[in-house]
Image (cartoon, rainbow, N blue to C red; front, side):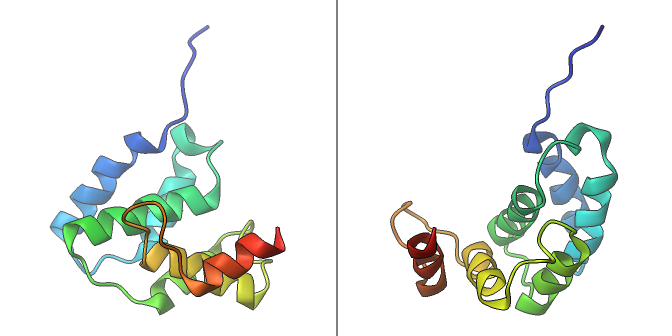
Length: 114
């Protein structure tokens, strides 16, 4: 029996390639592509969206909050979150902490509620 590991790093080159070919590529399209990938079946929705957005940020690809919100609504896992919680998670995706210490206002509120 062959053992296969689940790692988001296998999808990052696909994201880079997709954005290199078409910088206006939809985040939700890449998210749906990742969900269909059997090698990512055990990885949650948020880590996949984080990998897509952080790769786009590193490449200098501009994208909007609306695009991430649309991708959130395509996820059965993230769709049920309250609006305030979605806002905090999207803020964390749009403004990832550079030193691991800075956080957005909404992310701090989420951490206090846990």
